[in-house]
Length: 218
Ligand code: E4P
Image (cartoon, rainbow, N blue to C red; front, side, top):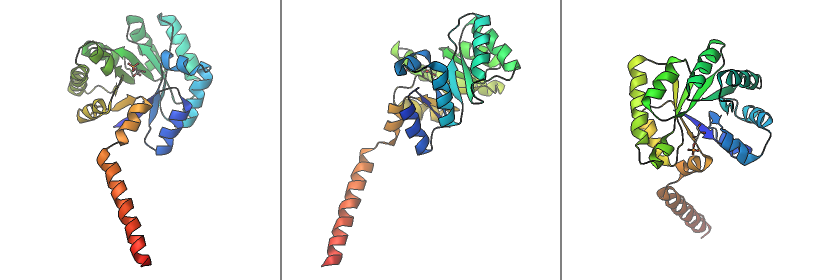
């Protein structure tokens, strides 16, 4: 399973990359606007840091505008993946861009039906939004499981990115399903490390080591 960070914050990305467990990054207009950085410059900086797939989202909603933006963004780095919203114009743009060898990530996916269209258009990635489904009292994980099953049935090559991840159990459940990628906020990545028994274990080992050193001196 690959881990992507869902952030446009360079410090967070640097830390994740230093740990050696981050394979890519996803951004969206909200995450970019939080940082207040110049969009293209920030995308380039992220690509240079992560040296893996970096999703940058188009903001046009019409086919021509999306394709134009996508071609410009794709020039920024070999690592850029164009994030395109799940609409008829978006799917048409994905088909065009896939034929040109430009990588795409179909975003704002909330149903297996939408995921089928993304795969049919030849998207490189599809991003079902788990947390936002849960927020509406729908079962985000069930949607994800159905997409995994459908993609397996047909051998679709589009990789599934479990997105809108809110907590570690989302990550674990997605991994149990064999999802290709989970993209998560930095705060969730940090939580994956945590277990009180690990902290307690370290504390005990350190105390016992101290006692051992003291005994040696006697
Ligand atoms: C995915 O690529 C999106 O950027 C992201 O996962 C959205 O998550 P949110 O629902 O926490 O905004």
